[in-house]
Image 1 (tube, rainbow, N blue to C red):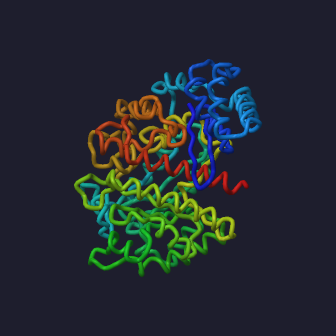
Image 2: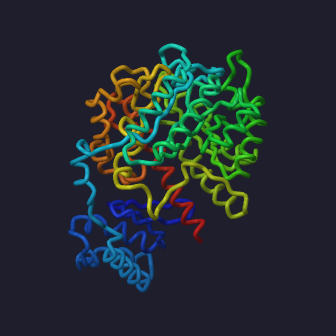
Image 3: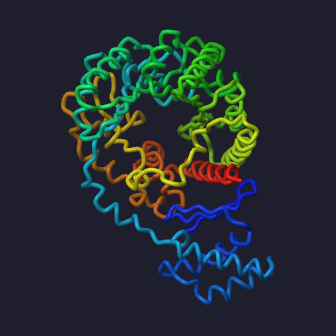
Length: 465
């Protein structure tokens, strides 16, 4: 399978099955495009058949000099010989044993607080309640969750725990107690905990920052962008804006973490009411933040802020605009990192990750304040996906095994998609929300993801020049 595109003056040819990405000149780009319908049916590697040359060469010579056409055809043959173009799919047979493969839990999302001090309009968690009841996780429940993780991780040494909510700083003492417990236990069991925190910043103070700088491998700081954008979607419980409360603290916190070489991300959400989100990402950069992401809201079509199909052309232009500015600022020495433009074209994740994605329901679990297990935070509260609890472990193996099978070849929309090894099939929770099946795919999310991948590859090409 071949995917070709032009973005900001870069001509890209992708061989999907091998993972090879080629920056082409217009002649080679067109040669591949004209050849694919014919070569696509021939076993690989192969010699370009005479009939292909007879068909493609005259077409190219209508547009390019004969010498350039000859060079392009020779280069295309070299790429085929190197198995970097028109290669066969060798991964599909790998999924046959997905259900029987052994998995180890490596990460937990601890819902340390089902409560929040903001009233975000788009909150999927019902202002922290997750359509259930307000609750704070006790140290005892959190301790059992960490014990479960250690026991269920097998030989895996590096383990991840994200303190999540609601707003986790509303249960700060338990956060600190669990980190202390984890540090003591990791020495006993030869494990290494990577703790992370996701916060809205309202309660963030000097003591919390100091603790996070010492103990948290990553901190995700929620902010939607410019003051008017953020405050419209992320007001406090009394209806006032949150921007002026949190931005000065975020700026100081991010600067401290930069000096310590500690990770952080400013994470925003864009909606139908803010389609020009590139302005907000650049606003983050202008505030001095160097690491950021901006996610599309996921909401039902009945919500006024939900992204609609007719919004996609504007969104695609925004990604292109952001990518061009990203390259410009990098070349000027004032670059930043945008999460969705980070892509590894040389090594990338292992084959299982390329095929099955985040590991929700198998390697990654969400834990409620009372100790129930769900495949991820977006499934919390849906009893059909209750997997077990901290006392019994994972008992609903039927649902767990369904998530094992959640891979790109189990999803009809993904099987023939060029982006399948980059997005790994997308988000199971989004697919379920929009289509009622974890093996479907959220269509608008797919289109946005494909555009982000194209932009990321264009950036690699542009910065390599």
